Length: 167
Image (cartoon, rainbow, N blue to C red):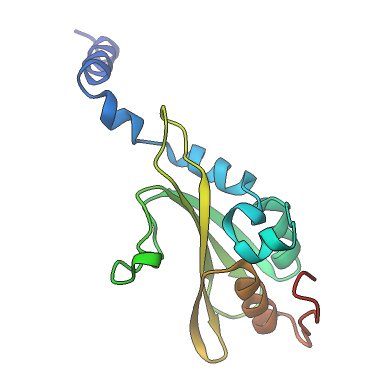
């Protein structure tokens, strides 16, 4: 039996025996695409109040484009989860981006949490977490504005936050 035939046979057996398992499995590239397409108002209540419907991709580029060397996305289990705190426990379905600064400093991470997948597709994006190494040490945040402030305050000389909460 060729390896291709064996792979097709195994795939058929998996589909026949384990549809519940497959329904909960989402490829990393789909989680990443869903995270980049999610809007700020989906994952951050303050941004919902401000009616900020920029995609994560747009927002992250605006926040980091002048100061980031690279942004690497990964999908899978939540990396910033804190199981001891229910609100930060994460899910099995996350996408996170590691943002490396252009100048010296430690890379930051943002993470998008997803609800349980349906039919092999990512569930709804519902939460945001980040971790940035600031002048005072690591800062864990649950909102996009916290990440934005920490990143810019650390890597943009002379950064002044906007006075308006929606600014």
